Length: 296
Ligand SMILES: Cc1cc2nc3c(=O)[nH]c(=O)nc-3n(C[C@H](O)[C@H](O)[C@H](O)COP(=O)(O)OP(=O)(O)OC[C@H]3O[C@@H](n4cnc5c(N)ncnc54)[C@H](O)[C@@H]3O)c2cc1C
Image 1: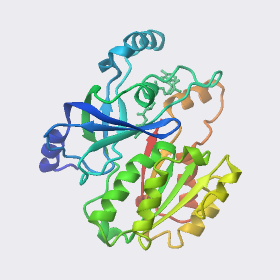
Image 2 (image 1 turned 180 degrees about the vertical axis):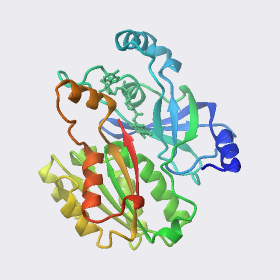
Image 3 (image 1 turned 45 degrees about the vertical axis):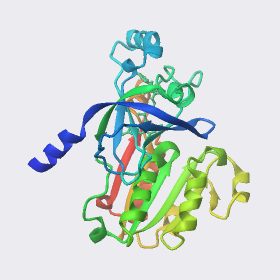
């Protein structure tokens, strides 16, 4: 149970804040990092926390939001975005991957992420609410393990990137294996930054990319494998499964996937998160050693 001190700390952390977009950095063809200028406010957040943005705070989306609320017959909720920045860094930043509308597959056009990725110039004012979320390191992480394994897909790298940067600075005893899945090489978010971190900490960070739909990606770098993150790959990269703590983040089965499958009388197809968790269990990582966060 949460202690009184934790409740007070959480209350102090979660509040609305007006920020200004200091930079919109294009990371990949469909992903941008928004660097947020927060004035002199002292920001209390942990690596792995997220903030929220409410579509109702974007005047340019007003009609679209109202229309979607009519057809869905419910209010559009705020969207969560994990910080890609780490608490020791000067600037607060989030990284957003555009959700796509796929004709015949996607029920409604995604509301907020296309705007954040493509149409938020420097100088835009935003209202954020932050910071919260359970996908953070416990204070006693060093007594629990010597190695963190990060298992991520797509924008699921965002909170892990923050955790990784923080750990490399603040927990010098911890080693890291990052196993990162994307469809193609050009979808890899933070590719250069991960390369730099690996070069800076060759004994403490191993990065392996699992690329599912781009066979040529293996020619790009030595640490690239083709195919999904599966049992065989995890077994090879996690030789001591009972000794590691895993942070696993990426797309999972959504409420909407469940409803659509139910209508068809089928079980929803597992997505990245369900497959990765099943593979981790199969190679013998105890469930208590696995933290998970679902996007979608
Ligand atoms: C804890 C957490 C942290 C996150 N962090 C990040 C991050 O760091 N970076 C990032 O890019 N994303 C992150 N996300 C995902 C993010 O919050 C949004 O879900 C994402 O950006 C899509 O929002 P959108 O408004 O563009 O799309 P939405 O409008 O939410 O649509 C998304 C999909 O849901 C479907 N849908 C929506 N409403 C309905 C409905 N009523 N019935 C059926 N289908 C529906 C749409 O058709 C579409 O396919 C995070 C999510 C969580 C929960």
